[in-house]
Image (tube, rainbow, N blue to C red):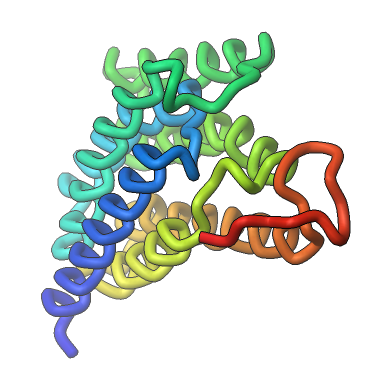
Length: 207
């Protein structure tokens, strides 16, 4: 199977994951965290752009599909009926730190390998609120889109044309973080947790 085919499969899965996630938001199953998705919206575009310039080849198809989806999800998260409740003051700090890294990148102070490292670090910082809420309230996250996203990003890694750390870094990081969220949701749902404070034996709606 060629890298182009693998990249195309990953892109298709990315689109399906995005549509599934958006559907879960519209139906109230998922509540996206505004801070995480706001940073991810910018980082998705940034990471896809850097990966494209770094020779990631067909892998960037998946990255650009997710960047578009992240933008739509962020816009939805700005509406109170869709967003995750309980944004903490620390979450704002997280967003500002991640935003500061983006300013450095946009100002040309981060280039090449440093730029990609900056993108990964900023993304990881922005990931924290969503990871925390996935643990505390897995009922606000649909599992299926994260599973599809994990597979899509694994395809993205397999589709990388140039075998360099710079080309592999962002898709590999995204694959790892998606798998991490899948594991957290699966473990917490397996214990019957839907909201903070619930435990074994509680009724959990699976998606």
